[in-house]
Length: 599
Ligand code: ADP
Ligand code: MG
Image 1 (cartoon, rainbow, N blue to C red):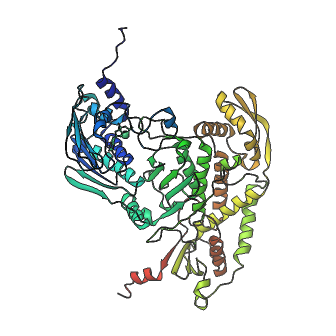
Image 2: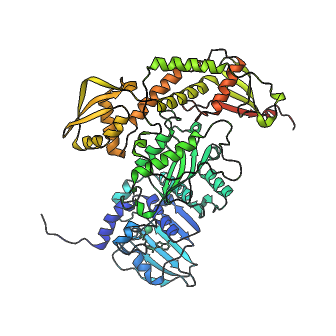
Image 3: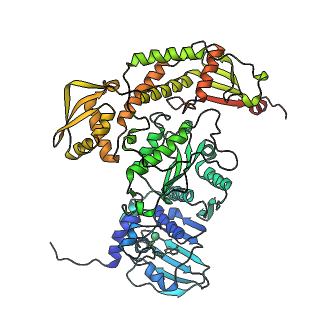
């Protein structure tokens, strides 16, 4: 071993740069965040050669005082916090005073700035040891930062980077993510002197909608629900979520912001998945743009070098709040309710109070006191019940009805190929996929029914012992009362072994050893598990699918009307259990268009 030496500032800064300045897009992220922290209303970006040759960013924010320009470039120098106490309550995007120091250690940086009513000043650095010098340079209020020849003095880093095109795409994607989070700021992006993007500042709800459309596509805007919880409370969730039928093959339209900062959080993904789990088919991904706001003291942003992750003080409350807000918005999607964004203006969909949910709720929406009957019994009961119900409503001639009283899905006209119901409502033609619709109706009924009966626990002949880690057993033991309420009795028999004594009778065929391991893993990952609920829902889904009227069956008009009426009062009835749509309408106007009428 040699003796210990203190590293030079340059090398120390380059090491720190390894954490925040990974590639051109991460430089751009830090610089835009500085502009936003400075209160800029307009941010203009110019990129050359994917950002390797030049990144120039200009803003009209508050600017930097001439005396602070050089300081701004040194490490741990920041105007955003003063002491450790401030770390508890961070209100800005930056706070570590590291970005400019890091960037200037791996590139040639020019910083020009002016505060209100003063002329500008400029400093130039070359990624070298010497103190930069400050000289006057005219500049309007705001700041311009030029970063040239990124990684010119750290060739090792440069070797790992991709082509200029890929790096530019990263910048483009990043700007999109940021532009989604601050509607009131305008952005332009140029690449090699060509204007590639222009996001105008958006103030009215219509402009917000246009901006969302230009960032996420108009299809999303047309098939999204607006989320807006009670904004007078401390914890609020706003934004847009895609209808289940707008699900995607990739998780590529998922944006989540906490107090304006874009983050990734397992807890959030879990809550969203859970809210959609009944309406989106297994490997599809919901689309969302969501903004969570809460007091800064409730969230720790100082947990990740690039601040991509956050930690919530009340993680369970936040999880359940997101889950419930989305779930209730989704449950409202059913015929007869205005569900899509109107063409102009945006509607509020939900309004929730934040009431910390009781602990049992973390296993899903249905409270589990359920399931004495056998599967086959359920199927036949529902089949019978439904068949009785199906013959109750008489057929009605729509012409004789006042349009105000026509139900949303209208009245049945005919059945097509024993698969589709054709109906007429005030708007025009309604098409219903019989099987898909009936399946959802049955599923929701089964869930309601299960929620209203008492759960039957079945003792295992030979109790099952499962060896786990200390911590897993601790967590399972903590939850044992909840398990019991769901019909599962567990008991700790040693530091690392848990014994399963009873299981919910409905779920007796589940592979319990694997199940308890999975639940323990969930508890470690995200402090909660919805596996029992998932198993139960899956089982009910299978039952509903088998019990639902199969395509190929001829229904009478009365039966069809009965199904339409039931759909109108069933939660989630816009999609079947696999996330396929159950019905759609063709308005008279659309039909006229098809036939070129009135042109
Ligand atoms: P941090 O953002 O964590 O404070 P930075 O290294 O990114 O650290 O910036 C250092 C300081 O320089 C900031 O605290 C801020 O005072 C100032 N600064 C940087 N960029 C701008 C800007 N675009 N407008 C105004 N001030 C800026
Ligand atoms: Mg910063």
